[in-house]
Amino acid sequence: MKLTIAGATGLVGKTFLKVLEEELFQFDELILSASEKSVGSRMSFRGEEYEVVSLEEALKQEPDIALFSAGAAVSREWGPRFAEAGCRVVDNSSAWRMAPRVKLIVPEVNGHLLSGDDYLIANPNCSTIQMVVALAPLHRAFGIKRLVISTYQAITGTGQKAVRQYELEKSGQRLSEEDRVYPHPILENCLPHCDVFLDNGYTKEEMKLVHETRKILDAPELPITATAVRVPVLGGHSESVNVELKRPFSLEEVRRLLSEAPGVVLQDEPATNTYPMPLFAKGRNEVFVGRLRRDESIPNGLNLWIVADNLRKGAATNAVQIARMLLELEA
Image (cartoon, rainbow, N blue to C red; front, side, top):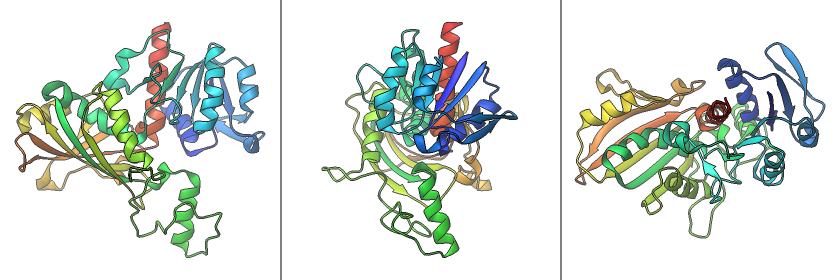
């Protein structure tokens, strides 16, 4: 089995390699591909050196599975070409997420939708993935009536250039225009601005949370509103989620459902200051949930605090899980 990673030199591409090594994902050949400026560079995996090749060269080698994290423009051009050649593509960009015929998959939530006919599969947005992993068991048990979401997103979600801006600011160095990814300093600051602003005043990141959540939960009319904030954190996204449920619930039921949910770790012990934090979630593949409490302003309201490593479960881990499910379908 031949596996290729498109965008291997980026933050998510490098995390793909870490996750593949930890998960002992089995394949016979590995092809690392990236943009032309990275072609010829070398990367290590499981003690071996690999030369980075172009996407054209990767396609010529006829891979069986491709993990894409090379940006939406690249995915729109190359994803269908790999799929048409018989390669199963798991794409981490926004290119195909809302395409009607492309499945948007979080294995713990809707992995059952995958079939042997799927050759182009979309990986959801990082902040969406961790949220729906926690919300899906509650949606199945009680039904969700409305969601109000506030995210606190790590700079690694923007990419390597954002990390460089943070490090330059931290060291007190002067930034050139080329170094500046954000319109304002990110060090010791919070920017209520993730991705570009749209005509409705929301950002693309906020609307991804709306549209992708509806698609994954198969709830096209679900009322959702979101505010996405960039914070000076390297290792994970945090979310404050206010849920209005359709049916009455007890906190004991909620805790039981979350404790039993695949991929979820419940951290909810106020007496010992135990709650999810990005510092703890960094480098982990699970979704951490805590600060469970009723919203006493409405009849069936619930507040949750949800944290996960955005490069792992929010990107690479979820994609590798999808790839494993595709292999199992062929077995």
